[in-house]
Length: 113
Image (cartoon, rainbow, N blue to C red; front, side, top):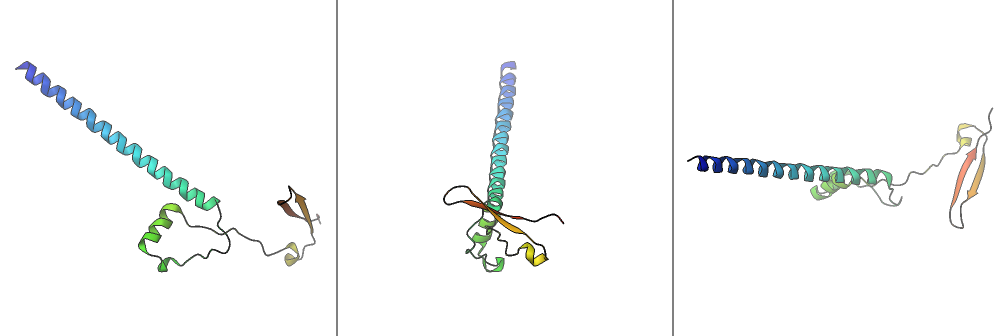
């Protein structure tokens, strides 16, 4: 009689551990999935698309496209500056720093007043 009772207790404990392991695996999978989505969203914000890509209005997108934008992030075009300090009435000089044959940096030097 005591052996049967002991066997039932061990089965219950084993079942409990199995449930705890299952829940732990589910929680880990959910956390990895949420972190993956956050990584994709962050990448979409920091990596620009070509300026010629139009952004479609959200109303014209299908449900699948909306879900894709929600999961992967909205593609942002690279920002461009079309103004100079002259537009604000400030004198400036343009300086270019050559990095290599195909890349360079350009900046403005604005003298102190």
